[in-house]
Image (cartoon, rainbow, N blue to C red; front, side, top):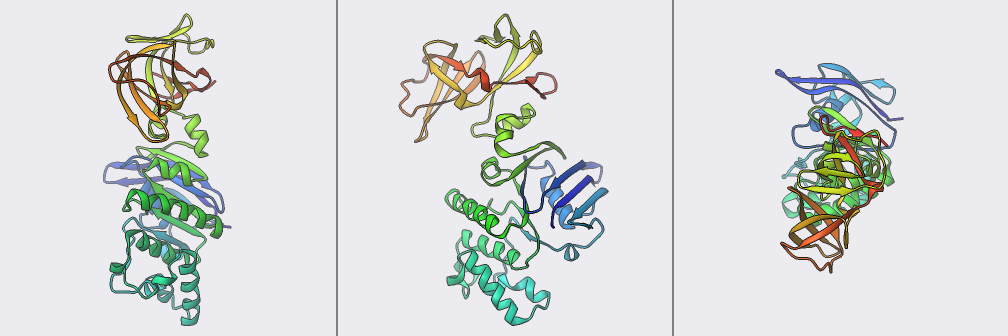
Length: 351
């Protein structure tokens, strides 16, 4: 068993509290994504699990072992870094087998495991090449293969795709997801890219300022954000937000009024933030008035940006939508998908 338990993890850098008592349980074989903006603490948390940073408070458990005070080499983990850290003077085969040689594994066993790792990642034709002769995506696969052949039950990955271009990143995401299904290693994956998080993770821990804002399955977080921060960070485009109050069958704010047929006594009259996704707004013959700012054709659909009062709102429309800049349109919100947030705290108000 190689589940990971993080209990009340605290980390200070000088007087800055980088981790604020984080607790997180990761199941054996799970692909857990740590997602958040730069500086939120996700890489620091990963490095504390790896033993590369020492906790100032709290504990880390891997399987049945408390590894809080163990050096990285004694934690039985493998790690893939953002920079790949492949050795330019070594061939692909030598790079993949480096860690095994450091552990003084017999040569015949190294050769076997290197070949298996290379085969898993499609690197067999490149075993005698050097990193300078490889593409960025191939170097990234070398780094992953080197981690996998160590046969550690835990794999830690720190933004391993951030140096790839868009097309390579798309392919690499699919490769890593397939790989995880095949090897079933407990994985912690750090990223600031919410598309990576949504497409790869079994669960996502959304982090903010050294704390976890929400943990859950990707679609649960997407559909039911725990706060305005999460709704605005998850999704492309992010969730739309309108500030106002619900009174007399309408949600009204500065320069707009959205008709609401569903009664919500718990938010009636309170200063609230209404959150709604772009795909849950439709352009029709009636609804809240909006002025079109820009129309962006995106192939499968068009993204319309319109002003509702003084707030810019994104609408996902059919690709052949017949609207143009400065046109006045009507927007209808799907009430079943609307999320309410407290205007003061940003926390979601549950149904």
